[in-house]
Image 1 (cartoon, rainbow, N blue to C red):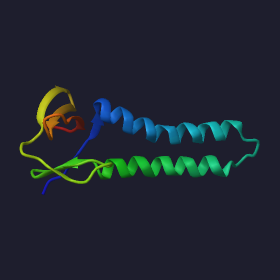
Image 2 (cartoon, rainbow, N blue to C red):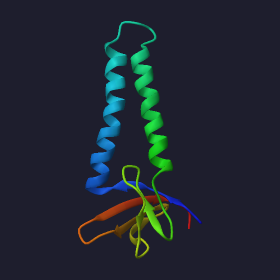
Image 3 (cartoon, rainbow, N blue to C red):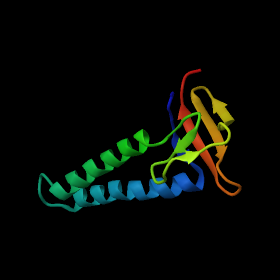
Image 4 (cartoon, helix red, strand yellow):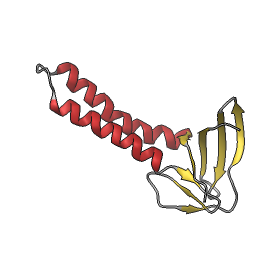
Length: 111
């Protein structure tokens, strides 16, 4: 089973990554506003941000049978994602899970 990892685009991706990047911005605010050389709350929030990015990458993939998003359980797919747009190594796919649910996925891959 070949897993194809991706980055979520569209409204869903915007909302998800907004929450993830809030952790980074809080870490930067704490780092700049702190008076100590080592600001442990900023370091801990920075580590949490990196862990969230790794978790997002590892739990965002599709297979022949299902689509896995980091914030949802596995969704079975009736059809494969369709190529929407491509430029060099960037491929944007669109997948329709239900009548109203449409996800745009960015995949970086060689042909």
